Every structure is written in structure tokens, then in C-alpha cells.
Picture (cartoon, rainbow, N blue to C red):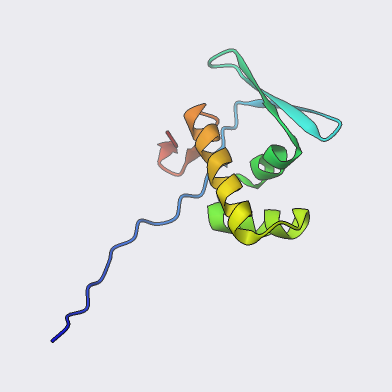
Length: 103
């Protein structure tokens, strides 16, 4: 007899850009200034696209679907890129979740 196993999944993280950051856009790219660390972070056009989607309502999969559609890239490549960028955002303390900082 084979027993079924139910896996408990964590809810998908829905990143939210920190509201105290300042975004300056120029020619499709952007600079984010973090007043807490006095650091500046440069975003290329795809990173800026992902950043704009960090509104607390979308998880990585949804952002990747939107990225794949707009930039006409394969869904798996889009998801990989989104996950990398969200990791970088979290590592640099630029995003948070409903529970606070995302790092």
C-alpha cells in the first residue's frame, strides 16, 4: 500500500519596495537611494521593471510571467532572472514583506 504524503508549502513571498527609498529614473534605468545605509543602487531596465512590480501583491512567479510577456523571453528564464533580482533586492535590504525586511 502506498501512502500519500502532503507537503506543507510556505506561502509565496510578495516583496514590497521599502517606502523610504528614493527612486531616480533616467533613460530607462534608475538609481535607488537608501537613506538608511546612504547607499545607491543602479537598476538596468529589466531590474527596474521587476522593482516596479514589488508592490506587495505579486510573488516571483507572477512577476516572471509579466516579465516574460513584456520582454518576450522564455518563462523559465524570466523566473530565474526575477528570483536573482529579488534575492539581490533582499540582500541589499531594498524590499520587505508583510512581516518586515525580506533578508
